[in-house]
Image (tube, rainbow, N blue to C red):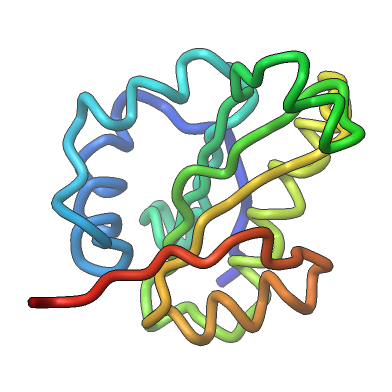
Length: 146
């Protein structure tokens, strides 16, 4: 079977939420309301489909960044990759990379010159992929139990 990328459709909500909550949960469960932010960037929500089944997805949006921050970053327009997930059965086949590249292409086409993403510390494979793709750390989010 061949995996194909296509734009997200409303009928994909259940499959996307299942993947998000099983494989990309970070600080809590993803809800349908969480996916609504993707509506602000109509070409920013893609799914990977194999045999009619959604096996991965990625979505993002344009960040509203204050001018002085953009100036400090040397950027004019910033995209944010919000969430990426691929079912374990379909990992290590280039699907995550293809989804992220699709978002990068869409952001670039729409005028972004910088893209941000966050990656949970425990997502070692994802961090490795993002590093290979040229993403660089810009901060460390830390916590300590007391």
